[in-house]
Each structure stands twice: as structure tokens, then as C-alpha cells.
Length: 267
Image (cartoon, rainbow, N blue to C red):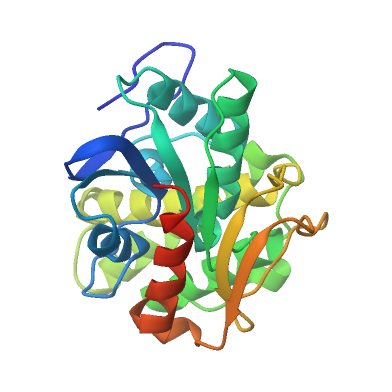
């Protein structure tokens, strides 16, 4: 399912499972490993119901520009609003939490209120963008440089800086392994697009205004992954805080039970 209106960026929804009733929509990131994801966790919990995934990193990897969180949210909301069956709940995992909240706000503005559940929510800032850039550069084999990068205040300009750094690193690494500069440019294009898309999403979330938090938001998290926007959580929010550590968080039976209990109030 794609949205191709000229006024909106291209976004898509992946159908992870089919079933009766309204859709459960999870905003999550595809991983290229066997690690558990929020999507696979939900797939086991909402069996028999339609489960759709919005992956902003996958969508951003096909564009060369920078999109604000508002642009992304508006595009996903427009896509969801045009479906035959509306979503029954929006779930946002980790750094996707700001986008899930922004999509819900866009839908609410158009008269469609959708409950939100957040799993281990994180709210990126620019320091996280630089930290993630450092980690990617270490993966490539380049030295750390975030402290001296000095990202431009303008989001689009900052993203151009980041893309330039990554492309230079990737080409240098490929050339060091015996490729010509032209071969290196071609072979690193896809990987560079994926890396850049991840950082572009984090930057869009970091530079967005603090998200509006619904009064009845549902949250499953733990102390080690807890992160809150400056406005804090509403007193009426339903929040489960466990003791699971991040590497095992999504594998925890306690987490699955807490997520399932909250979903049970909505489905």
C-alpha cells in the first residue's frame, strides 16, 4: 500500500498478518537479524487480526532528502484514513514513539481518534543522532568525530552534512578493500541509503516539537529504557514499568503479558 499524492512524501504500510476486525498498526523498524522486534511480538499477540507495519526508515531509504516528522506523520495518517477499516490502535516501539504519537495527532485532527500504545518509548535528541553516527562510523571502520562535527541548526543542512560524512567513509572503506572509486560509489549506495535513512528519521524526531501525549496513552517500559518528553506523561496514562534490560526486553514473557493486557482493553 503506497501513498503517491504529490503533496505528500511516499510512504507505505506492510501487511504482516491478515484477519478480521480493524487493523493494529505498529510503527517499527525492520531488522536484518534474528532479533525480536515489536512487530513479531505483536504478531503473536494479535493472532487472527490484521497487523500492519509502518517503517519510516525503509520509506526514507528511497528518498535523498530530509522529511520532517510532521511530513511523515501526515503521509501515514492520510494513508490510514483512506483505508476501508480504520486502525483500532497505533503502537510505537522505541524511537518510533514520537512518530506514532504524531500520526495519532494527525488522525485526531481529521476526526478519527485512535488509541496509542508505546513499547519502550524513546524520544531522540541531537546527541543521540551524533552517537548513532559515531556507532555507524565505527562499523564502517572510520574514527569517531561527532564531537567536532557541529551539525547545522537547519535540519536539511544537517542531514546533508551527515550524508556527506557517511558516503565519504563508505567509499574510503570500499577503496581500502581494493575497489575503484567508481565501483565503491555504486556498491555502497544501498548501504549508505539505509544508514542515512536511520539517521534522517532520528534527526526528524529530534528536531520536532515535543509530541502531544494522549491522556489515555498506554506504555510498557522499564527503568533502563525509560525516556520521556519534556512535558512528561499525563497522570491518567496507563504505564507498566518492569525491570527487563534492553537486550532481553522484547523477549520477556512479562513484557509480552503487559503488552497483551493493555491491548486487551482496546481490541
